[in-house]
Length: 365
Ligand code: IPM
Ligand code: MG
Image (cartoon, rainbow, N blue to C red; front, side, top):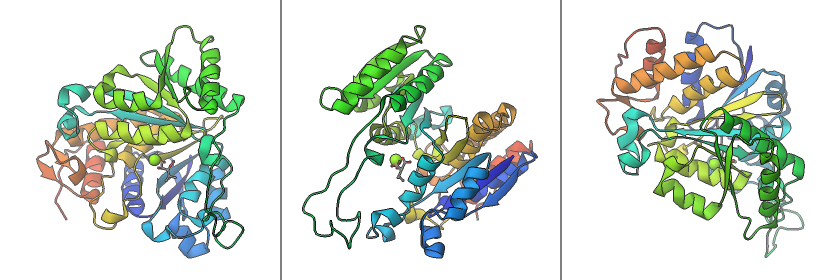
């Protein structure tokens, strides 16, 4: 099992280091290889996604990704920004299906910004289409080519588009996922205003004919954003486009107490995947041993389940995380209800100890 390890920028290096320790503690035959990505790769090689990094990701059985981005790159031309690394990986590896579960851990109910009764037991899955939509349409604007034709342009635009096969394949993924859970799928769109999303709604409705056992409803994105904070437990699986999925998945993540808890998987047609925390590079807390590594550690569990066919090892990681939370250990982002405040490294130590069958015991350092 060859795993490409791409820590990236900001807290990416700290949280991925802890996830790698957890992988090592499993005692499985992993072969890992690290590469630079994002701002770190730009500094070293002049490009956020160097050819060697892309080649490594392509040759690996799975990719573990940290996070990319820093405000200091805000003035760079768009093609060189750190974010282009993750967008390039998604596109080049064909990772069209993004799974973003939002699970509220029993011990963290009080960490949510919503009333505990609204989120207790919350378990929803957002499936975001990841390689189409306005993210990959034709852009025009000043940062596209700062020295070129659009340098002083007084307008900018991006193009929103979806093709039938793109919508069909994500719809199939979503219906199949719903079939294995609560059998309810909500397709989120903006069919009342956007032609792209009327098309989306039509195709999802067509595909539904093949999944009569799954209940489908359609919801406009503004209403979905409201329902997520009004009554989130009404949802089971949500499927939506790239842009709406980006926004709604951050919103859903916060319901669970902290975006620092949530893993994600991005899969291609052959089940190969890139696994990353749902959160970003958080440059404000980088290098301070403050970041919560659990989202990345739980991403390793998703990797084991989806790409490496070791659900047993995935279960072990998830059980270890639950036991650490039950023991009262908390990073700052999930502090509520905790008894012991720990940093990134100590949280990693605790998960490793729990995996090895020892009780979580840490010192703060
Ligand atoms: C995410 C991030 C990315 C996105 C950025 C870093 C390009 O916000 O994975 O949700 O917009 O997709
Ligand atoms: Mg996002």
